[in-house]
Length: 177
Image 1: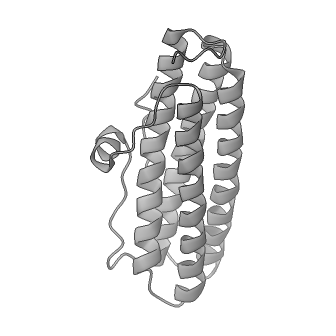
Image 2: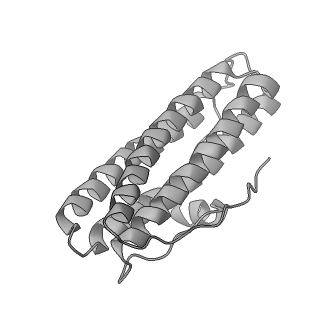
């Protein structure tokens, strides 16, 4: 049955592409966070193990919400792991033998990249594609990433204050317009 929600087929297709790119990026973030949950070691093991577990559960909920949004607009959701991994533009170092400071910095970089992309995508949905519903959805998701990034940033500052050397991440390029 044809989807009739006030968006033309071209706009629905484009919004669906945006949502599916975000879905792929969230899967990378989920897999990375889960990997770090399994592999974190060191003096902060217990607190970081719990935190990464809680964050991966939260990201799994975000993934479900994104897929449901794509289905709601009639675009469909890319659910095949291989297709998601191929569509993703980001990646992170595997967690085995990675210092916790590197894990925190890597997760912060991934969340901050998502924030920038969500900000751009929300604006595109609102202005160019005239989809206020998806724009609002993406803005809400961006706020959740901002809160997580703020928490990670505070932990990194705490570790720096304790004399732990943190890796510096170069700014990544936005590959999607």
